[in-house]
Length: 189
View 1 (cartoon, helix red, strand yellow):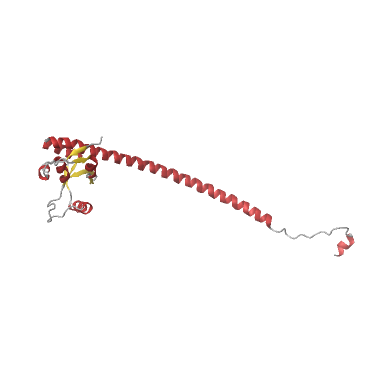
View 2: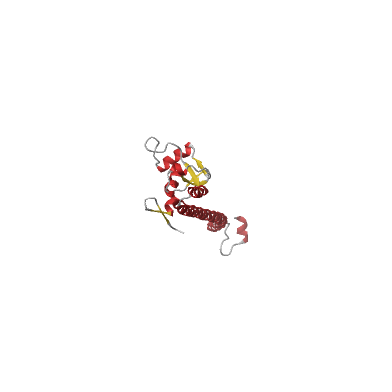
């Protein structure tokens, strides 16, 4: 399912590069208008004539984007307006409205990039779920181990106490003399 898309100057754009341009904004996976325009080989203003499946970034979202991706500042050749972003459906709609061979061809690769991203996210969710199950099993095993260890410590303490008891000197008892003892002398003493 891999592939490459020819850019307007004849160079080639891998699907991975398209995928790296997909952003998550307001829980939607989107492409910036400028990135999509470059892929479709049109000017950004032409692409922004569309009005479905796209929205404009808020000032805060735009500031965050500028800080994360070193987007150029307005007044120094940068954007004058906040960018629009296109969802997967918006990118397809724009390609069909533009109705150029390039836009239609590239839109297939854009869809593949979105699909690959969804598959990757699904794999991460599956991995996260498996990790959670493993964590729970480990906790249960640790609790069982702790219970076993506590029981073992108690049993060992009892063994040590019994050994200490055996090691104590016996309490002094009145010793009986060895040999013949006259019972009359016994009474006197």
